[in-house]
Amino acid sequence: MTWADKVRLSVDWREGDQARLAELRRWLDPKSEEIVEDLAERVVKFNGAEPLMSSARFVQRLHGLLTEWLTGVVEVSFDEDRAEKRRTLGRNLADVNLSFEDVILLENMARERLLALAQAELGEHSRALSSTMQTLSKAMTCDRALVYAGCLDLHDAELEQALLDRFLTITGFSPTLYESLAEAWRWNQEQIGQRDV
Image (cartoon, rainbow, N blue to C red; front, side, top):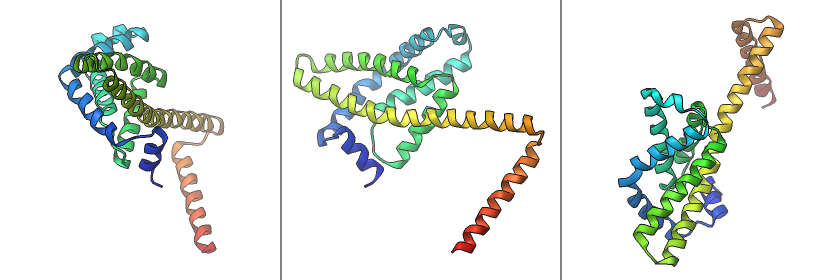
């Protein structure tokens, strides 16, 4: 069973879900810039990072990441390429100090805005509205798992680097000596593996 099959089964993805998500994306497109602006302001305020909003470069990067995140949520495809892109996005979000808790907050804020869009389009059709929001919840669940994996990747890399720095400080090894020893160990493991074959 492929990763895509597992994801579809885990959220009970059905035939009509993709069409409902495409419709939600169509409603979002003309409003996405406004919604991203709102999400950025709210998450920065939540983190007490308002001074960063005076940096045009930071604002541009944050808006780019939030746009990628939001449009990606409503563009679910179940393939390895998408999985890797969303994991990379998770690492990039963490790189600008947006934690996984911030991603959950963003989801809740985005869900409010997307519900308002769906209500404006569907009016009083409660069954269609309910189906659309269920599909959105499924899509967000899939997306959350991938983004979280990316956040963990960055955290693990930072932890590994901190441990390496501590090791080098304690032993007095230079990074070059450490890399040489690591390379020799990898080569030795390959030789052992070849002998066992």
